Image (cartoon, protein in one colour):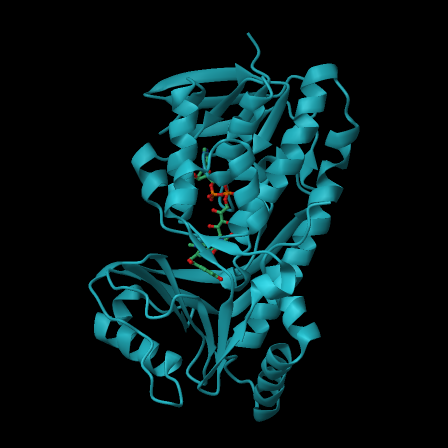
Length: 391
Ligand code: RFL
Ligand code: PHB
């Protein structure tokens, strides 16, 4: 029997798509290369736009999110040792929520398993076939056995390093790519966050970000060189950089130390492929685009793609209508490019560029000062940060 939609990848994109399709009465199968424990423990994004929270709420997935998530009505930009608050709520009427991506993934997996939806972990050698036909197929290995499934549609939700995007023949996609000359070293520490709101700091030693996961857990990032190894960063060195970069002129210390529970280095890149479709394969989330994390847009964009794709698939599976599916890539990309622009702008404004001269430094500080002092400047940051409208 043919299942309607095959979904590759059980990240936020793939799992939410499976759930929205289930609510619409459409059957799907989710295939995930890693184990359940691995995807549930992978520490990544933490900041959700209001629209992301709304989608999860409307689809009945946000019980724990509303109990445990931390609502934020503002953020701080810190430069030249002084903090400036951007009042997101006053400027836009919206707020953002801190809730770990792995918690969203846990909630989505629990919901999927509760209604008995197909979700296969630890699958190997996933391969796509017949994408330009109306009977696309997926082959894979599960527990040493070769399997083959038939679908009407395949959703490529397998992240930046997945197999779906590379399964599209050469020459079909146009890729837009920018690699930044720095990376982020991120830690999770058992220490209460020193500030209730996020602090984005620009400092001559490099960028730093103070965020959190709960009232007892801090998540902290420092800009580092992309070729550096995590072994070059002792705990003492990490804390020393955080204290230096988040220091305030008035001497107030805004970093609480505690045992480091996890640490890792993430490269920074902007990347988009167009179109987000080939035949019966539709790409969504990191499989089609990635952003540097400075704007906190990656997971939010993945969820926004799924919102558009799920509606198009509902119409297609109900009566075969293809207009929304045909419009999916253009509609998703219009929003993707605005988030790309915002993420690039935040990254450029807040990081130290080695080799940058005194002129660049002055312009960066002038830009930050403008954003903090001009209502128009602050509003531009705020309306992008809380999330642009979907339509
Ligand atoms: P994911 O989460 O990468 O999920 C893809 C899934 O596909 C699986 N997979 C395969 N499965 C089967 N067969 C194969 N051949 C497969 N190959 C891969 C993978 O195992 C995985 O489970 O993609 P998705 O769903 O598109 O979600 C995207 C988000 O994960 C990503 O954009 C965010 O984490 C980015 N991001 C942030 N986004 C935000 O919205 N707000 C933030 O505050 C934020 N902070 C961040 C971030 C990403 C970071 N890192 C580590 C990249 C902070 C960091 C440090
Ligand atoms: C996070 O909480 O991990 C986080 C928040 C905001 C960002 C990036 C990461 O811009």
